[in-house]
Length: 615
Image 1 (cartoon, helix red, strand yellow):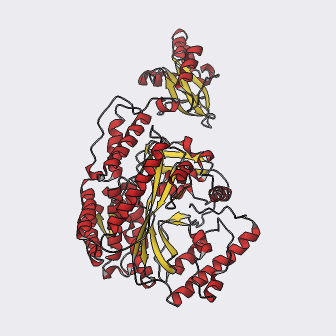
Image 2 (cartoon, helix red, strand yellow):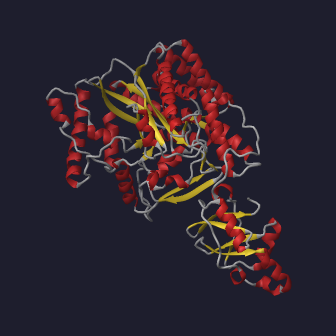
């Protein structure tokens, strides 16, 4: 995502040339495979760490470019939003203490970032979705000022033809519209890379698809989005919808999602996957490319396949095939994109070891996945695991089995054997896979967040709950203890931070009436729920009035009005505030107008209500 292509014109001439380079890259890749030029005598691992930047109140901080400048390290790069950064770790050969090497480098990189971040008054948090992230940080002003990001947003928005719609239903439900692709920036992941030999690529890729569900289910760490409890790994639904350019029509037609799991087992080679993607997804970004990959091969050089790699970076398979060149040698990789960031470094490295061990330890009976498992079985396992995590009952080889039992009885033994086969240090195998075993038995990061969020909500406002939760995540990460050992958050009546904005203290679970409701119904609802005011909306969901106790008192004198409609007696000129209105301003307005409540609106839509009780 972070490649700077500021020299691009994104015009028709550049696009036409890019298409030719893309077609040539596919031909060049076929030649590289035919001539056995792809590296096949070594297996390496690598990873990318996405991080969240927060201020001293644990809210998103848009200082990524400032931090990037002070860090001054090529391992770090930008992300779509200015409150995220990415760390590209070095590749290591799969042997002996390679996972300890990854862990050591990641720790050093994060410590370096934290040291520089502290100077800027910010901190770093590893989490799949930052609990304190709100709609306020998803405006275009929080997009990192890199040409590629602006162009990506411009093109995908134009293809969509309307605002992006997000609808995710879990325990709670989140339904909202947005005018940019910045919902994608809510996701932070720990992306895993495994080099694969060309001859084994299809078998490995299909196996990666088969194990994706159970691996995801035991790694879930993203249950909350904007205060709503949704999926155990909400990133899966969020990412697909945030970049969804498919148009809603009255016609029933097949449309391919740009973010997805895929639609079939692979049968031939890695080229088949690239061809499928190019055939079904439009080109988003282009850039000027100097020389054709075919010409480079004619001159005895190894091409980087620049057009293919740029294109591949805009198609978001959860298991993504990758081509790269290292030390002058071309190689193939499978990139695991579904693992969330956090909860701690040790948890992430354990996830890494578990996935790699499974991949390289694949038993022979799983070499031909199409013959033993239907593709939709694997795809459904992935979706179900994202929804319900460790509690998932999945289908394995046509039979139902709990995720816990599958991991403990079938997959962990495969991972152990796989890592042993590559001579990984026994201490690391036992340590890292031991974390997976303990987490399978005791709980994931998602479960820890949900349990503590529910408990805190019994006696705290939502905003305070999310702050306390994020603070606890940050503190536990510093201790680097695996999430299954994290203690519960201690109850406190003291907020993590002082309150500044109306949105922090307003009530969001609203009772409301409609213009054509009868006053008798309003009277009953207000008495039943012991409330002193109730907003009135029209059929478009817009705030048009307010009913208060003063109206109820007037009814005592004139009982006939109970048969009237709410629109006849409601206050029509309503004083309102916005979510980012300062609390002191709201207090002043209530005193000045001698009112007991203030509806909180975004435009004409009410998102909350503020009363004296909230103060």
